[in-house]
Image 1 (cartoon, one colour):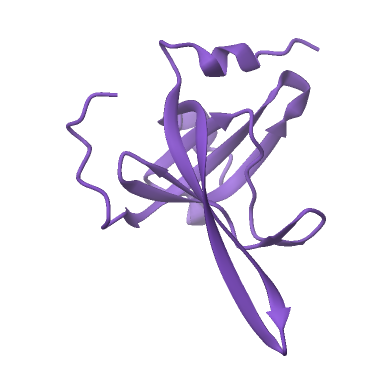
Image 2 (cartoon, rainbow, N blue to C red):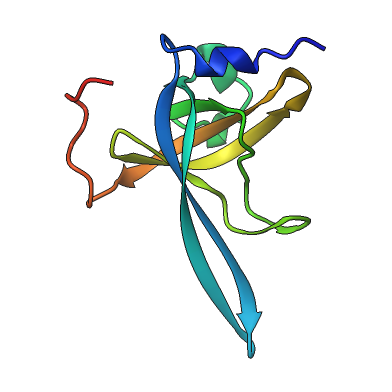
Length: 131
């Protein structure tokens, strides 16, 4: 298979973003959640019309962003090497809950789609900042 992950590191295309990953464990009958913030590098772009069609019409998000990275991203699950809620990708001060992850590992990357859930109040408004 052709590994296209080099494109993810192209200085013309790649950007930094952060992933907020919440995991947890049961402690004396109570769920204890911890959050890690993980730096990612990859391609971030608005989802195309074709990508939007992959979602059921009633559940179709209106502000869908696609994240491409060599690092694995997760949805809510309780199995294997991840036990926690869906990752939240933060890009330019805006947060997107991941709602679909396509593991294109044969090609060297993961593709995830995130729906806008709000701003990170601890970050300055970066819509006007240069990449």
